[in-house]
Image (cartoon, rainbow, N blue to C red; front, top):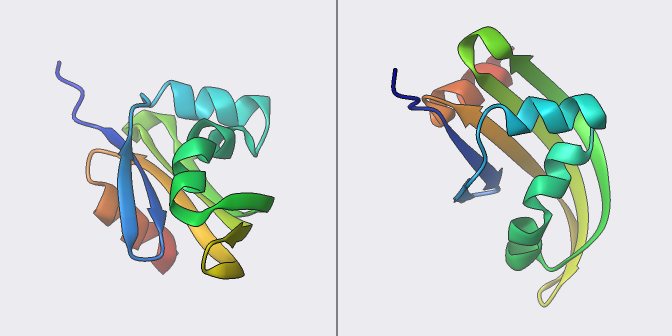
Length: 105
């Protein structure tokens, strides 16, 4: 069986694929609710600048369908200034669809 699932981060209108398997995302989630963010911290920092703070906004994790949507509010300081942005980690076969369903719920 071929695993067609992928992990992405979504930051505003920017998305970026991450090299993590579904097993790594819920494993991090079980350790600590911010641990999935830590997996993606360097990629997020490359886009936003210095991460000043992180707060969990919401989540959906379903091991049966290998789907995870985890949303954080990220306070950052970058070249363009400071702010807070929603950053979402999505692992699914169809990440855009999983993200849309998460926001509909």
